[in-house]
Image 1 (tube, rainbow, N blue to C red):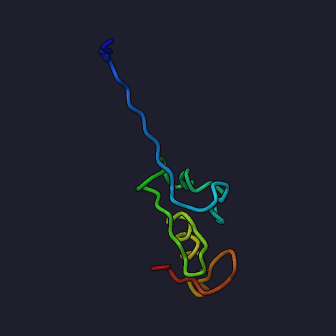
Image 2 (cartoon, helix red, strand yellow; image 1 turned 30 degrees about the vertical axis):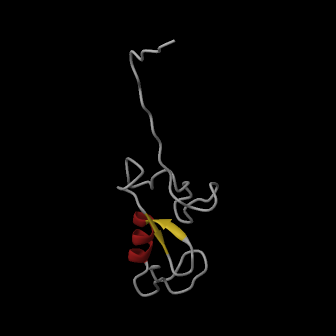
Length: 86
């Protein structure tokens, strides 16, 4: 018996490589697989940024957070000085 495929539709999905699917950005409270309030689409246009303290935020969220408190640059979750992880 031979099978002939007449049409084929492909679909794909993406997700961030994080440990817990229920984690949300500590600033905007959106899940990491979605985008921050400043973006229209998730993905490369709205990347995640890890801190040295192991907290993760949307890049735009943490950037805006650090701009609003320039003399006191700290992680919004643990108040340690903000350093971007390598």
